[in-house]
Amino acid sequence: MDADISAIGRHLKKHRAERGWSLDRVARECGVSKAMLGQIERGESTPTVSTLWKIAGGLRLPLSRFLVAEGSALQRPRSGLRHHDASGMIVTPLFAFDPALGFEMFVIELPRGTLSESASHAIGVIEHLIVLEGEMELRLDGEWQFLSAGEAVRFPADQPHAYRNQSRASARIHDLIHYPFSS
Image (cartoon, helix red, strand yellow):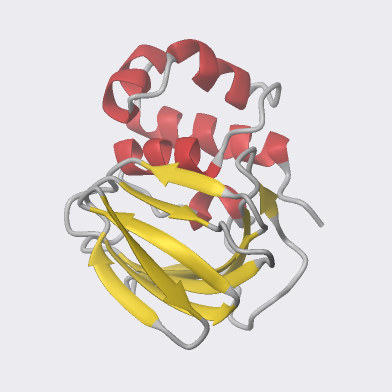
């Protein structure tokens, strides 16, 4: 089952309303255009993972708040709920954000030819990547690092970074994201 695009819009509208923010304010805080935010709220546009990260960061929310049903903690890994990115990246939540633990976890698939660039997340956010299958590259500080199955890396995600797969096969990774704030 793919992530519900209209649900992403409803989550955005709900979190915006809770703060009493206009679309203009959200656009300033997130670095996403007001027009794009309006399209997402109305379910007219499928946001990329990178765009969702910008929105989540601007609202100081974990990414899973937009991909997992409200109140769902995903206590057990559940397959099927997937968000397909225009870059080719496929994100499946394993564990939704838990404020008591301060993290969320995803399975990310990078089909051959995928390049997904991510803006800086909120200050203090740390990502832990574990390559399960295949090969991928991670860009940090403008440099690409090659990672293959069984390798792992932890990095401060409050800097621009990117994932790419130039190999012949898909890559699968676990991405555990730790937040310094509770939301």
